[in-house]
Amino acid sequence: MRSDDTIFAIASGHGRAAVCLIRISGPESGRVLERMAGGLPAPRRAVVRILKDPSSGEPLDQALVLWMPGPESFTGEDQAELHIHGGLATRAAVLRALGSLGHCRPAQAGEFTRRAFLHGRMDLAQVEGLADIIDAETEAQRRQAMRQLGGRLGNAAEGWRDTVLQVLALLEASLDFSDEGDVPEDLEADILRMIDGVRDEIGRAVADRGGERLREGLTVVLAGPPNAGKSTLLNALARRDVAIVSPVAGTTRDVIEVHCDLGGLPVIIVDTAGLRESLDLIEQEGVTRARARAQDADLVLWLVPPDDQPGEPPQARHLLRVGTKADLPGSRQDCDLMIAAATGEGLPGLIARLEQEAGALMGQGDALVTRERHRRALERAQDSLVRARALLVDGGPLELAAEEVRLAARSIGEITGRVDVEDMLDRLFSSFCIGK
Ligand SMILES: Nc1nc2c(ncn2[C@@H]2O[C@H](COP(=O)(O)OP(=O)(O)OP(=O)(O)O)[C@@H](O)[C@H]2O)c(=O)[nH]1
Ligand SMILES: [K+]
Ligand SMILES: [Mg+2]
Image 1: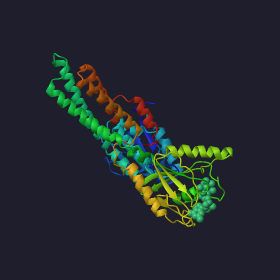
Image 2: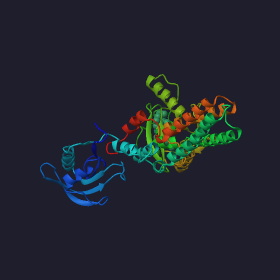
Image 3: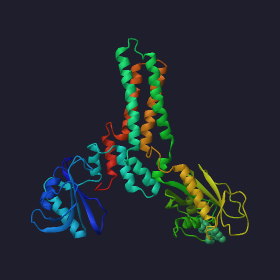
Image 4: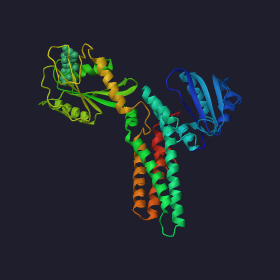
């Protein structure tokens, strides 16, 4: 498998469709068009051509054909696109014809994007933004992914890296030219100011967890005593019959998850077993799982029915008390909200409150850091800068301070991939689909 092969893949979805898009990239792309479409169209001009089998000359399909010579293509290489009819036999015939041409082979997952990265068409943070756009399920996720694809984090990282490299240059110069082996006083103030500036900006970026939450979705666990109405609420929020509802206490045992879109924000609602002491082994296991999920959740809704002694809520980072079955007599004074999931009463208020909580925890797609990979790299950079600063202030060895600054630059460079990152690349691109 060679990196200068010409690769091809279906870039549209699979299964029968009106139109199917086949992407081709690599040095043979032009020859492919000449042999199958009878010649090269003008660059970036869509034309209709009869595609022919290159060996037999048999017409295979009538297609819209595009020729996009590099380096101004997505991959930076010569590229072509065939918009063929999306019937199964047509696709198979065109793919077979492409595979019969020399130096042409089907693309691996993520190979088009890998080539775009290797040819400098996008940085790693943009590659991740592209993956997130394909995975985006809600409006705020799409917005965040678009910002990442637009180079928002990458540009910030490049700016930080530039400043850190300036600091490094000043330290190296001091090493070369100062007899005492330390930084001249006036320079030291400048250097410390530059270090502090970058450290503060990175600190603000990593303190904001909203971007990662928005990518992954906010987890809201429904917890409460048996028969509180947890499953009824899940079904109402999901607007479908997901969980079994019954008057039998202890109906739900498994953890049931539903993905919802609340005002453009991705929220995972989790129904759990009612919390109580039980002799039933299966119910005990359900209760254990319920407590574990509540502990990990971003938000727990603690559901309590009227006139009940609900016991102690589970351990949680953030908890809202919701009184249920508000249509029944008996009132609660100890709740943040009241609902009757069976009649719909109070649900708009609950949903508005959830949207508000979700917005506060996730933002609206304006965070810089959207992945753990970013956070870890930036935290390493921050640590290195803190150590470099301490060495400078304490009059420690200048070589060590310079080494820490070099490490900081490298850690920041991981954001855009401007360091050695082969194994990281393999992991990243293998998560892509074929044709991307
Ligand atoms: N009147 C009234 N009854 C409700 C309401 N919500 C749920 N119920 C009833 O309460 C009973 C228990 O509801 P579930 O949703 O199964 O309760 P749960 O908390 O999931 O129960 P477990 O899974 O057993 O812990 C059912 O008979 C529901 O119809 C409500 O808003 N009003
Ligand atoms: K029940
Ligand atoms: Mg239930």
